[in-house]
Image (cartoon, rainbow, N blue to C red):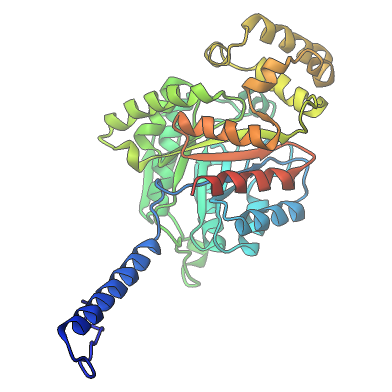
Length: 387
């Protein structure tokens, strides 16, 4: 019986009345206790979640803000911005979104340590985390190498670059004075939050000393590194559901190497999607997007997708010689079905559940135009169906 529960015996003339009162009191106490349990926050990995992601086109920042607000209203777990080169960047929209929202987590998915120096990345994510009041996630990847090279930047030793970047960023956010002599990165006596010009003015103290870092990974070695040092992993669009199982096997190898449990590790997965009416074929935007994904898919991904490498090579040749519009004409319905969720709302939900069945803990919808709002509603329906 609750210590706050008082049972009066006044007016009770028999034992049965006392028993009934006591039973009622105990039942109310149990109900209150159960109610408290149901209101307990659910742990990160156990939560039933859905995310929403966009790249630097086609939506302007004000519209991205509105979709982030809608996603938050629909109880989405997180909102992600990919930094694809020569378009809008990731952090400016995320900062605007941080001001306009209160609860939804905000992920930079992904940025790379080649075009943004590791110390600058630490500064930027700490600043975003301050604006967002502790809701930021840093997703790091090596980026699209051919596009980085167009900027005159050398991409060397991606595995080592990722390892060194994560270590430096973590040490800086922990406000350690950092001297680091890696095989790629060198940092000399950097005390994060301090600057000699402003010693008497003040310091910048990160809101959190440990901001989650997810690694974007595809190949076995990078997946194993993610399992070893990351707080989570983020899979790119264009990967079939069976890939998730393959990836988790490699993530587990890395986690064991560091004596970590996969229960502590988050598995995020972008899913390109576009709602279609029943029996309506995919349009040129979807076909062009799939053409690019197929063209640069690995042999392993093509095999998991039941697609022929010779077909992918032919599309790549057309893409590089004649452009995406022409390449899109060679994309088959099987390719569209394999590498995304381009279908009716019901089929999209089934596809999300398929990714989940293979081990994805955080499906992230990346909608293609034009019906972004419907994609958000589909994500909400998926999340509700699982509660």
